[in-house]
Image (tube, rainbow, N blue to C red; front, top):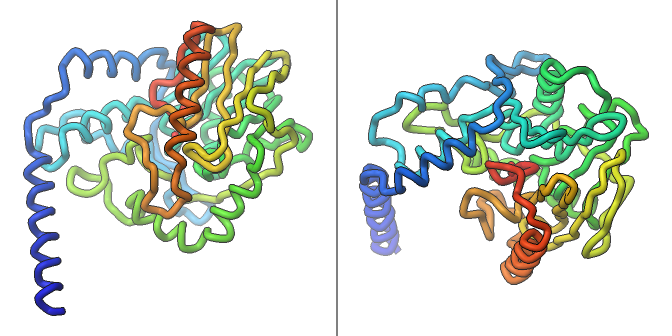
Length: 333
């Protein structure tokens, strides 16, 4: 047993050395490709937030400026491709996607998409915590005016997309649209398995790491995950058909139910009048997990690929484009 354990330690040591050696190889991503990504990430910027966000006890919930050191970083402690992604995700703030559609990026791991309806804003996803969602909403209103929230769309059952919903429930009669099975999936993962999964998520997202070039630089989909107050709300409208058309505050939206893909309960949608498509998180600018370190349910690869093929065919016919740079379009988080 001792010999086996020694071999395991030796293997781990070799793996660590190899990983570090790999991290200092020269960047091989084509310059042109990186330039286009930078342009996509920066397009439509209206304003950028600064400072920090704390809870009532003074605990740090979020910082908008911690990763500024990446701008001038020239060391060799960060894998070059991770550094590229980290810099792209550093493009945070309020962005105009097209007429009547905006995104709030970098206020948490996921993004918020804002769609202008006839009477107010349709909010797509609500971030991971009430505090970051409230800060994002305040920033939106500072930039675009004090409109009411007329509807909420929750794209899937991972809490980084619904945890801040309470900050948006200014009117308890606001319609909340979600995919079928949302509450079962959300509660089984985040309540029944919540304690152990929360602990594993803190390891996965580096909750106790310091932000610097040797510890925490990025989380792939976004800069990191907030650890604030997680809330949930019962949906009032469920997307329980493969395709369902709804008029949401005067905006005609085609919803697609895509269960057992990136999440057990998930939807995507299209706004054909704007040639836009929200891929939720079945389409991202990362190599997405099939199984996560925090212990979420393993994803059904065959179903996921089927939904991607269907999305590709649909959007080619509709001449739509995915409206998020970072890919959780609603969290293109």
